[in-house]
Length: 90
Image 1 (cartoon, helix red, strand yellow):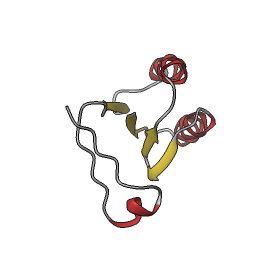
Image 2 (cartoon, helix red, strand yellow; image 1 turned 45 degrees about the horizontal axis):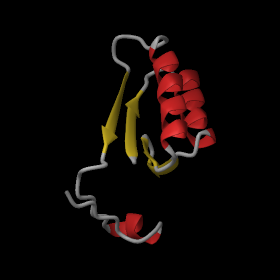
Image 3 (cartoon, helix red, strand yellow; image 1 turned 180 degrees about the horizontal axis):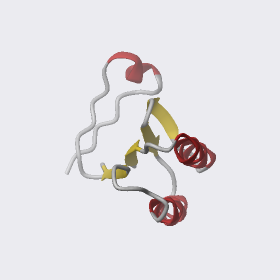
């Protein structure tokens, strides 16, 4: 599972990026934070698309991708209503 967080200043590029994430199976957690829980092939394809978008970024734009495969994840608030808590153990 990946968590993708972005800060993109250009409104059009930001909207296209968000749309691309949702078309590739990402679920919006917060305004600019998405969860991707899919097959490795889908995740690999998504990483290529994110790399293509990154080529269009200006100085202040950024995307941070967290691979949470080996991390404990606990959800609070509205997040717990999306599904059951997910906990990963080493």
